[in-house]
Amino acid sequence: MPGKGGGSLPVVLVDDEAEILFSAAMWLESEGLGPVVPLGDSREVIPFLEKSSARLVVLDLWMPHLSGTELLPRLVQSYPAIPVIVMTASQEVETAVTCMKHGAFDYLVKPVDPETFVSRVQKAIEWYSLRQEITELKDRLLSGRLRRESAFANIITSSRKMFAVFQYLEAVASSLQPVFITGETGVGKELIARAVHEVSGRSGAFVAENVAGLDEHVFSDTLFGHKRGAFTGADRDRSGLIAKANGGTLFLDEIGDIKPTLQVKLLRLLQENLYYPLGSDEPVRHQARIILATNRDLKQEVKKGAFREDLYYRLVFHHVHLPPLRQRMEDLPLLIHYFVEEAAAEMNKTPPDIPPDLFTVLAGYSFPGNVRELRAMVFDAVARHQTGKLSLATFIKQVKQEPASQVTEAPVASILEEETTLPRLRKTMRSMELQLIQRALKRADGNQSLAASLLGVSRQALSKRLQSLREEDEKREEEG
Image (cartoon, rainbow, N blue to C red; front, side, top):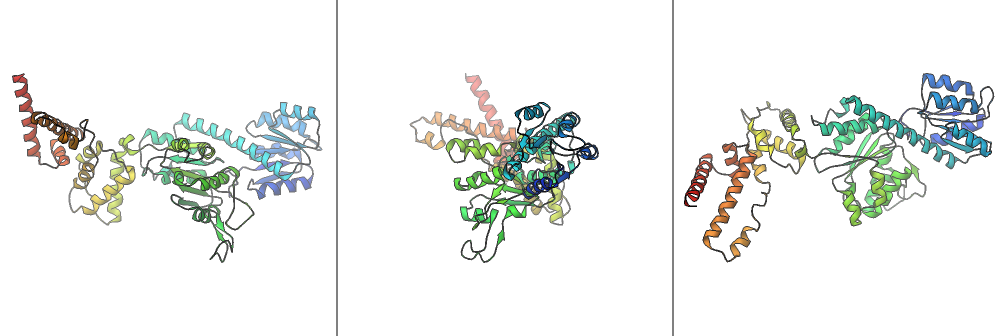
C-alpha cells in the first residue's frame, strides 16, 4: 500500500542504536510515512542506494566504521535528489552549521519528541515529492509523450489542450498534495479523477461522492463515519468514505457548494490529514489521496465571501481546468462516432451511418451541457433510429432550442409599445428576420436545407424569402 507520500520508496533510517531505529520507524509507520528501512551499520547505506533508492535518509552523525560526517557529503554528491536529515546528540552550533553547509536538509538534536520528528520528516518528504514533480513535468513536456496512455483511454480526445492536461496530471499523480479539477458541468471531471488514480498506481479503491447540498451531519457521517452511540440509531461503528479510500483515492465533486462550516472540516482534512468520526474525540489520520472538483469559479466565490480563502489556496496547489467542448470542437467527430458505437452496442442495434451534415449542424452549437449533453443527444438519436443513416431531427431540435443572440437593441415587446410609424416597425422586423436567417445560414455553413430545418421552414420557403429580400434590396438601391 502506498504511504502518505504517495509512493513506495522508503525512508532510510541510519543509526547504530537499535532502540532509536525501532522508535523512529514506529513513529513514521504509525503516521503513514512508511515504508521504513532501518540500517544499523552506516556502511550499508551506499550499497542500498545503488541497488534501490529512497525519498529520505535520516542520518546519525556519530557511528562506528563510517561516521555521518563522512557519509553526508558522499550522499549529497552522489544522490542530490534525496534529502538528508541529520539527527545527533551534539548541540554544538558549529556542527549544525557544518552539516547544513555540506547539504543537509535539516538538523535534529537528540532526544527528539515524536511530533517534531514526524513533522520534520513530513516536510522533507514534501520537498522531495515537489522536486520529483518538477523533474517529471519537465520530462513529460520535453518528450511530448505520456507514460501511461492507457490511464486516459476512456477520455476521447485529439485536443492539444486536453493532452497538455494529461501531461501535467501524469507529472503530479504521485504528489502528496490534493488535485483540484475545475470545469463546466459535463466536461468529464470524474473521468479525469479516475485517470489520476490510475496513473498514481495507488493500491486502494477509487471512491467518489457528490457533496453538493449535504448538510453538516450528513456530510460528516458520509465522509468521516461515526462511533457507536454518536446519535440516535447509531448502534454500531460505521466507516466513512475517507476510510474506504484508505490507500486509494477519494474524489469529492461539487465542493464549491458546501457550507462554510463544512469548509473548515475539509481544510483540516487536507491540511493536517486528520478527521474526527462523529462521536469521537480522537482524530484519525488518513492515507487517501484526495481529488476535488467544482463547476463554480471559486475565485469569485472567495471575493463574495462564500468560500474560505485559506481553503481556496490549499486547493489550487495542483489545479487543472478542463476546457468546454465548444473550445475543442476538433473532438466532435471522434466523440460522435464513439457515442454512436456505444449506444448501438447498449441497445443491440447495428450502428447507423453518420450523415456528414451532422457535423455542420453541430459546429456552431455552444453545448452548454458539454460532452455529457452530446452523449445524451447521440443516445436519443440512436434510440429513435430505424434504418439507414442517423436522423438529424433530434440534433436540429436541440440546436433550435438554444437562445438566439440579441438581434436588436430593444425587445420586440418594447418596440411595439413605442409610438412609431408603420414603416419604421416594418424596417425593424425585416432587420430581425434577416439576422435570424443569416445566423441559421452561418450555423449550417451555407447549406440552405440545414438552415431551413433550423428555422423550422421548408427549403423552398427559405429560398423564396431570400429571393424576396434580395429583390427588395435591389429595388431600394434603384430608388436611392
